[in-house]
Image (cartoon, rainbow, N blue to C red):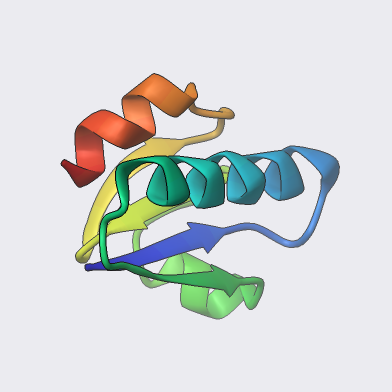
Length: 76
């Protein structure tokens, strides 16, 4: 599974990355987590609000910090 956390590195983006890592650790899912900070790369996903989470190429969340339960639902 490929998970990307999109954002420039703001506190909300950092919190989102932390939640994603915790969700992956709790579920034991085999996933790579990549932080994408390049604005052009972020725009390629059609995302213009951050933080955003992309799971296997599908945008799951934009412009908010997702709850850990949401992330777990996406990766199960």
